[in-house]
Image 1 (cartoon, helix red, strand yellow):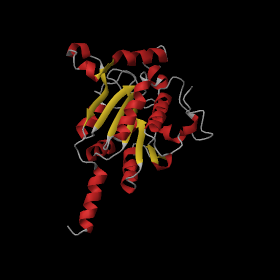
Image 2 (tube, one colour):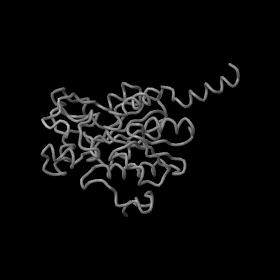
Image 3 (tube, helix red, strand yellow):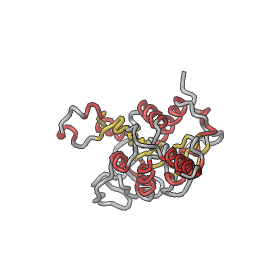
Image 4 (tube, helix red, strand yellow):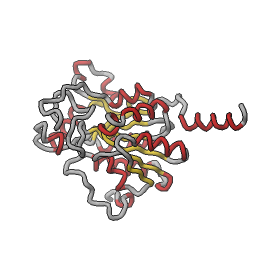
Length: 273
C-alpha cells in the first residue's frame, strides 16, 4: 500500500511551488515519515523556517508552523523552545538561509545545544532569490553572481555544526530517500541540537548554469560521491578525494541540553540559592 502523505498536508496547499526535479519534495516526504515514526503530536510540534525555496516546506504541513524572516529560523525556533520546552521544534531551510545570513544564529543554536532538529537542504545555491552563490557553492561552479566560477572556498555544514557544539550531526542526500526519514527521526529523538544536512539539487538555478544535462545526472552525481561514514573509515585519503561522508557523523549524549540548564537556573534563583 502507498504511504498516505496527504493526511499530513494542509488542505488546499498542493500543488507545491518547487520546480520539477527539485529535491525538496523528497525531503518533505522524509520529514513526514520521520514525524510519523516518532509519533509526534502535530499540535505540540513547531516547524520553523526562514526564507527561500526550502523554507516554504512548513507551509504545506499540518502542524504548528512558523515562516519567519530571512536567516532567522534558528532564532525564532530558539524562542519557541524556550517559551514551550515541552514542544518538539524542527527547523527547515536551505544552505543560504541557514549558513549565510543565518550563520550567526545557526552556530549559536549549536553552541547552546538547545533541543531541536534543524534540517538543512543544501542545494549549493540561493535558488529562490536569484541564483546567487551561497557559502556552499562548490569552488569553480557558476551562479548568477559568479558567472565565471565561484572563487570562494566552501563551508562544510556538518563540520561547522560539530565545531560549533551540536551534539547530533548527520548527512544524507535526496538520492538516498530511505535514509532521510531515519536520520531525521534519530535527530528528533536526540536530546540536544540535531543537524541533518540533506544534499539535494537545484536543477533550475544550479543545474542549468553548470551544464548538467538532466536531473537524473545530478542525482547520479550525488550517489557517486556519497560514502557512508563507516565505509570511509577503511578508505585512504586518495580514495576519499572529492567524496563526502553520509550517515551519522557525530553523536554526543553527555553535553547538557540548554532548556534543562535554564530551567535549573530559574529554580535555583527562585529557591534563593
